[in-house]
Length: 420
Image (cartoon, rainbow, N blue to C red; front, side):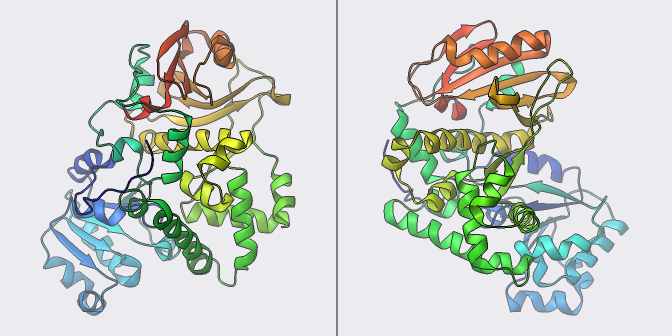
């Protein structure tokens, strides 16, 4: 496939959240979009409003600093209040407006890192609903948001619903796509060295600017080392002590940095799955950085380097799959939850477990092989046999071209089925 930028920089890329956001605005008064810097929150919000107020522009902020209530009343709704943290008083005006008139579709709020800190003290409960916006998935980049998501297909349990996407993909192609990542500014507009410089600059902003807004006086050099360690441990169930030692931090500082990473919406922990039908399960969390392009940038690896290191290869592929599923999980009407599974001493491991309402369970294994066999699904088969009817479907995602059945409720499919 190779790297390629998108020359059509002014064309909007439809997001998975668009349909749900439009529906939510018909029922909710105010929605706050949260997510990593440069993930497209403002661009998406603009598609759903009648008025846009950029509060980081002095000319537009002036009226809201003087009298935010009057300024809001003069605008057609829905209103986008972008970078709301620049005029904190606007939140009080939104609160009062919603309290006085709770009709749906009035406000969308977007902000930066400071919003996460300054908004924490605002009583938004019952007034503003927070919705996550993640980096782009391949489904969105490929323009396939109208098709059933992988989460939906897993829930239905149809073994025939996992065809590969059009085109031929091999291991190198998947690694290439993972390294492109999903930040719109890099994934849609840039290629090669320009993209790598953008990602390096992004991380530099995170380390030297964003962290200071959340944690005053932070040692940025130590946090930069911590980020590299987190990249190395992405998609791995790793004892925290190993990461702490590698980062040369004490436990208290390490925990504070992990919390900071989550507040920046750049880190996520997937909990270990538990069931009364299984024993000796490990409760340790599985850590992820939210975008595989950041993992590769922090580890300073390109496609060839990833393919030479089996440990990094497996983690990049696992992280890439989790990156595609994250927004699907957040937006699914089935309210699924994402887990991993590991028994003590590693006797059985499953990369990702999806638990739906009613106790239904699906599971995914990610394999860096073009020709998966029944043995690649042995952990899925073990889980199926233990859970019985509770187990809906097990999916082995691989780097080959074909989809085929591996056994009862077990199917193998190319990774590209994620965006088919």
